Length: 477
Ligand SMILES: Cc1cc2nc3c(=O)[nH]c(=O)nc-3n(C[C@H](O)[C@H](O)[C@H](O)COP(=O)(O)OP(=O)(O)OC[C@H]3O[C@@H](n4cnc5c(N)ncnc54)[C@H](O)[C@@H]3O)c2cc1C
Image (cartoon, rainbow, N blue to C red; front, top):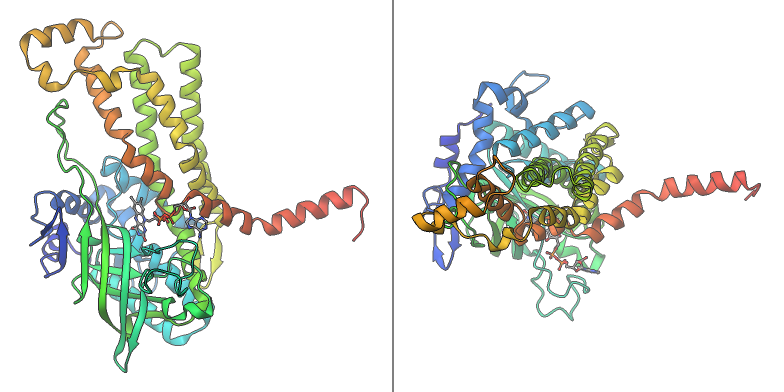
C-alpha cells in the first residue's frame, strides 16, 4: 500500500485536466496563483499522514494485512471507527484554520454510500467493483471529490419529465456497449473537484422507473476526456485593506462540471439503471456527509466563540448581562453541535457492512448548525458594534496623522490597543461573510432535506410514543 506525500499529490495534478477559472483555461492547478491556494489546503491531508503528531489519526491499518492506508478509506465498523474519523476531520479543519482539507472526506462518504447500496442490492458485480475500487484508493492514496448535485433545471419536475427545458439537467446514460457507458449532463457546486484526482458521481435524488437512465453512479479520473470544469472565483489573498496576517489564506473553490459524452468503463460503474436504488445511495451519502459537515463546522464555531469573547472584552462589555446572554447562546450552539455529532457516532447503525452515524442525530446536528447559524452570527455582530462595517482600514492606519488618531480614538477597553481591536474586527468580517452563510445553509443539503429525513427516520419513535400514550390513556387498538 502506498501513502503518498503532499508533494507527490501536487505533482499528480499536472495531468491535462480541463479547468477554467475567471474566463481562462488553467495550465496547472498546482502552480496557478489562485488555485494553488486551494491545492495547499488539500495537501494538508497528506501532511497530516506525514507528521508524527497527527499520523495516528490520519493513518489506519488493514486489520488483516497490517498495511497502512488513509483513515478516510478505511471501512468503518463501529463507534470507535466513526469517532476516529470524526476526530480526524476536526483536527484537519483546525490545521486548515477552520477550512477542511477535503482531500478524501467527501469522497469517502460517497465511497461508503456506494458500498452500502451495492450490499443492500445484493448485486455481486457492484459489490466486487466497489471493493476493488476502495482497494485502488487505499493503494494509490488518491484525492477524491463527490459530484452529487445535478443542475436540476425545474426542481419540481422529475429528470425525465418532458416538460424540462432539456433532458440533460441530471447526469444520465446516453449509450452503453461491451466496454462501458457514455454519460452526459452537468453537476454544480462540486467542491475541490478541480484539484482532486478522482471524482465520484452519484444521483442527487430518488428516481422513478421513467428516470432509470438517470440512476447512474461511477468514478472517473478528473482528466477523463469530455469532462470540463469551471471554478467559481474566490479571494486567494488577504485584502491589502486589512491588517497583515502572517498565515496563508485557506479556502476552496467549487466547480460547474460538464460531462460531454464521457466514457466510463464497466469496472468503474456502480449503478446503471437500478432506479429503485438511487434513493438508497443518495440517502446514505447525505447521512454520512452531514456528519462529516458537522465535524468540520466545530473548529469554525470555536472561532465564532473566540471572536465573540475577544471583541466583548476589547469593547469593555464582557460583564454586561445581555452580552453574557449572547455568549451563553453561542456556547450552547457549539456544545449542542458537538454533542449531536458525537452521539451520532455512538448510536451508529449498521448498513450493509458499514457503520453509519445515527441518521436522526446527524440530521439534527446539521439542521441545528444551519438553522441557528444566522442567530449566532447576529449575536456576534451585535457584540462587535458598528465599527465592524465602518472602521478605517489598515491603509489609513499607515498615514501617520490618521494612525495617531486611530490609536487614540479607536481603542475600547483600556489596555487593548486600537490595532488589536481592529484586527479582531477584520477577523470577524472574514468569518461572518455572506458567502459562508450560504455554504452553511445549503452545503450537505438544504434545511428542508434535513427536516424531511428527521421526520422519516423518527417514524418508529413516533409510533412507540403514540402506543405508550394510548396505553396510559387506557386505549386498546
Ligand atoms: C459551498 C457549497 C459547496 C457544495 N459542495 C458540494 C459538493 O462538493 N458536491 C455536491 O454534490 N454538492 C455540493 N453542494 C451542493 C449542495 O448540496 C446543494 O447546494 C444543496 O443540496 C441545495 O441544492 P441547490 O443548491 O441546487 O438548491 P435548490 O435545490 O435549488 O434549493 C433551493 C430551495 O428550493 C427548495 N427546493 C428544491 N427542490 C425542491 C422540490 N422539489 N420541492 C420543494 N422544494 C424544493 C429547497 O428546499 C431550497 O429551499 C455544495 C453547495 C455549496 C453552497
